Image (cartoon, rainbow, N blue to C red; front, side, top):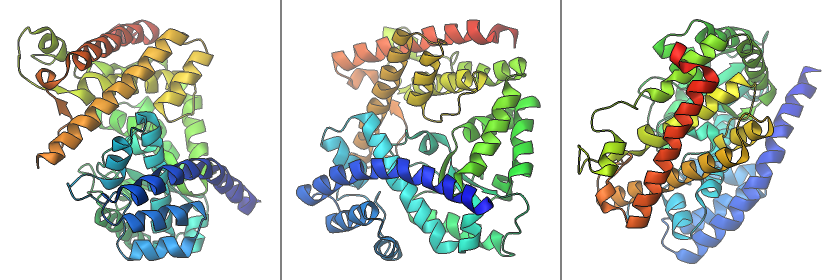
Length: 392
């Protein structure tokens, strides 16, 4: 029976993923093969064709040769994202394609390093923007591992997980400064033990625990038995129904950056902090993502992507259609602006900061940014009312 459950979990992941990989193949093969501006364009072609046909040997050979679908083009840009951006691909579709391609890469890397028995009795998951399907430019590693209750893992589990983290680092994913990755024992455990830890993050909230809870709520299975992750999430959601005060405390982080000196609103209106850049994640992306995540937790919504969470909240009547639409459009606008600014910084040989200088925006972009951040302001007020944040 356990094997059937594991197979069912894997099938659920694979059916969903194959749809997106087919779309990814159509987009990336065309862009990589036609443009000639991507580094190793033929390898992109080989890689995506291997994914679509599920040719494991071809994928493993490419990985062993050091291929990474995020490899940089001749201008230093992440090749895949730059090609999709240059081709005019919508931000939402671009992020989802990147998520599915990366998920396949992580899955095959894990299958290369972990014995089949470990793969079958575990669930490898990614978190943060990667888990939500909203990552465009690579950030650090955010991943974890769940083990089936009663399963005895290999004695060299520590070494296997360390090799996996090192492999991702070779792919260009730096180690997480907070240690949120497989090589840290805190981010792996049985369904029972890890589930207890996750529930403690909710009912015994501290700054670190709430941060870990937010990261985990975006967890997305990429290899192994996805039902293990679903079990931990289901138990957490059930607890959230009886924890209004804890959910409100969790949601209160939407105001974490709202009162910084020289705020984004003052800069856009030319009142103080003039010329200072706006941090797009702090000013808009985080409040939307975390606010929607908090409402989803309060409603037992298991979806991990912000778009899917918004759709579910609209279906439940928690948000009306207009509110859901403006939040989603605002998020995608900010993601696109952040990508545009990040690619521009890469072109200049600078580190990607996530900042945008309002003075360098077109008048249309500046107006859209004002409108979007006004949406964020209104959403904060809605959260205060719905979740009673003033009582926290």
